[in-house]
Image (cartoon, rainbow, N blue to C red):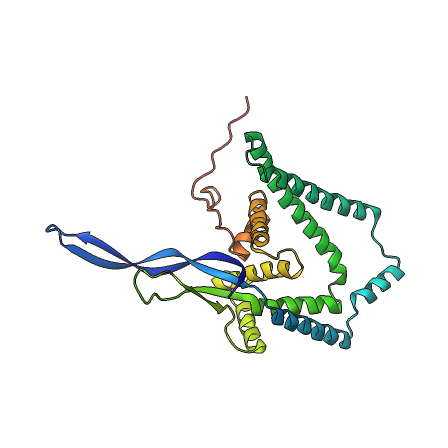
Amino acid sequence: MKTLYEFTSHKKEKVKEETVTKDDEGSEIKSTKEVEKNVPYTFAIRRPTRSLFDEGELFYGIRLAEGVRAGLLTRQMLNKRYLNDGGTKSEVEESYEKIVYSMILDKETRFQELKNKKETTEEERKELDEIKKEIAYAQRQAQKYEAGQSSLFDQTAENRARNKTITWWALNLCYKKIEKKQEKEGAETEFDYRPFFGEGSFEERLSRYDDLEERDDQDFDVKTLKRFLYLVSFWYVGRASKFQDFLKLEESLKEEAKDDEEIAEFASEELNLIEPQPKKAEELNLIEPQPKKAEE
């Protein structure tokens, strides 16, 4: 199976660990004990086939027509009503939009220029690090702006159809990578891919999706589901189409998480993308905070 992207998440599990010691006579003594370890699991987003694209388009069309029949307005109808009522983008909004997207383009152009250099100076390497942070911040601001604009059209027939179609794609593209058992010792490791939501009809897989949503937010599979949805959503709107796009997307989020506690919590608690940072002793009330010295 061809894949668009693969990622690894770690799950704390109790595993049996075998240790070998020697007694006084030099004989080996094997013992097994249960220890808690971070066990890696690899997941994959499948590369869609032509027939799957056809099914996805058909699914979207059916859900769009379903919404219209139920009385939802289309985006065009809602936009027309909005303009008739005097609504329009302000000059400030249009200026902000141009500035943010122009900055992203300029920074990415400069980033590629430096990246393509065979040799870079220490100053240029520092500039590269700064540009990565600036791009991540600008992209986040652009996303917030777009979210604010699209909130006007949350209840349109297209938006409902899009959200349901993203779920449909997740049910069809999300897989777990499994290492096959080796028949011969020393043979090359082979892998198999199993559907994350299991086999069966769309309704059966959707039922498993719903079951996951009912679980605790800290559940490993729930975090994996959220990470899948995050990545598939960006793929669906054209923000990621190859491995490097997905990697850049996650690296940008990690970079911004360093300076933003809210994003760090989202990346760690929601997506299991980064390991949560241990809290300091003062935050856990394990030690008394030191009193500040009086200013002389």
